[in-house]
Amino acid sequence: MATGRTYVTFRGRANNDITVMLTTLDSSTSYEYYIIIGGWGNSKSAILDRGSYCMYYSAVLLSGTYFEEFWISWSGNYIKVGTGSSPGTSTFMSCYQSSVYTLNFIWIFTGWGSSGEWRIPNGNTLLLG
Image (cartoon, rainbow, N blue to C red; front, side):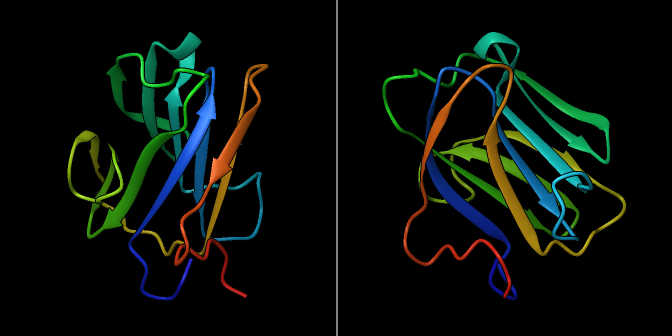
């Protein structure tokens, strides 16, 4: 993430379980926020804060055939997730957090037997170097 960045946009194609971790440390085993899009067989999505579920959303969001556009923002005390390429529009999950974490890294992957492809637009540098 670029210093001062408060959102990321990306396109993903998977049958299920697009997973994004927002972390303070460069580690895939320690996260502050864990976002699942199209989990549970592409029937639900969720936001977790350090392992505790904060928000569920029930809907089919992934096709497995097409690249779907998503954005994730972390501004103030809110983690928000939406569709499209414009952060703040078409929000489908929002989670208030009393603690605000310094986020330095983003991990994007699929889970539960799904494979995926990603397209990150220019200007979205995902790691501080």
